[in-house]
Image 1 (cartoon, rainbow, N blue to C red):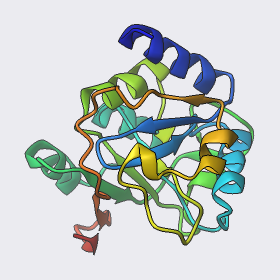
Image 2: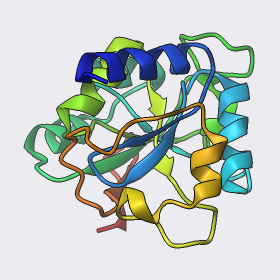
Image 3: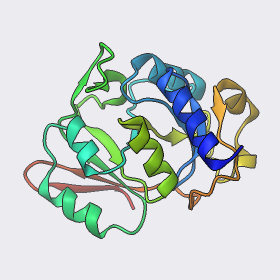
Image 4: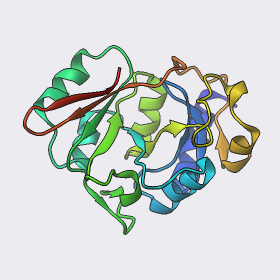
Length: 197
């Protein structure tokens, strides 16, 4: 498949509520439309993960982030502008619902405190995928919960590969680091908590 055909097929699957296995700017991930609660539930099932744990999302840019959180702390803008490594920011005040409204996140991607972790990927392919989808997509490591995170495609369990609707070919160039992103939690009053360096 040509790169544009791969992107088109990934988008088709995401728009139809399916699950993709794809390389991100960090590790190989399971992805779906973050506004589709049923698709998000499938990801929890595939990972055998407790759905009380929230999921990281990918957004194309801060404009997309702004549509899905009530307020972006000013420090987040600075962090995004100077960042040169994969960084997930946990924003307070996610805009979510359970009714499948594409202008709201699915409730099952949001943490119990109403926050949501969103990364603007450094890899152009992932940015383009989120941009063309028009909404955030889930990005959670392609492993069974509690097992090691695969750093390469060859390390992904076959049961994960068999459970998804589309596997992006490993040849897609995403500048994947093979390591998880750093995670920073922000508050609206300037609070900053480093969760993972």
